[in-house]
Image (cartoon, rainbow, N blue to C red; front, side, top):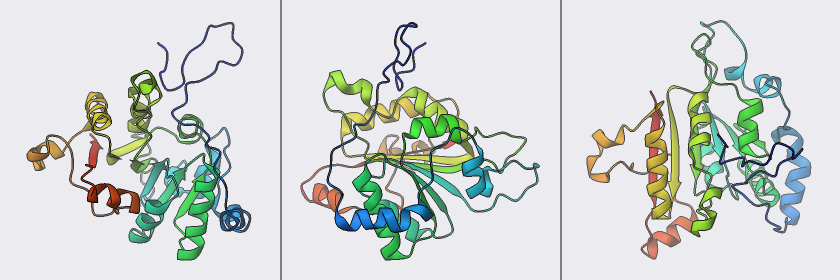
Length: 259
């Protein structure tokens, strides 16, 4: 069955073109962002490599070990952090948590590195690569034999809604990706999505509800929200979001946990 995240092509095509959920925007990298890339990149940028050793060398949470190895610090994966405003605020709010942040937009990577330097953050690492390939080749699925080895959380905030119907196939939140993420979450780990586009919120809720490894605890604790979640305290209101709220736009948080 074709994977809608990667797309499909005839068998005789040597390098099939994958359907991407993102485009590499031609934004301008500022002088400050460029300086941050050069000065802080060597410390905080993680190279994309096909194998588990790179991330295991940074995060003990992902290293091979016996079942009783201490779990260490929580590890949260963020997919698509934009310009990094929320990422930096969350990392500052939760200094005891490690964050691995994926983003392909160079100005955004430079902007988050700049925030890291300005705020003296030490608990963020950045992978400037397609998160789907990071999941497939660098992050192992959770294994009951090594319960400390996995993700404690995943953040996907305001992914591109791809408004036009013919572009819905490009939306990031689809069954195969959610299945990959659920496999890599520890039991009790959470997946938190947020969007300001209600039709996309409805689709996200449907897709997450269809994943057998995930449960929606909000249905019982907040039945008035119809499956959605109140905004968790760690997720800040960005300037863009505050403007939308003032204009009467809605924001929907969706939080599921691995069973």
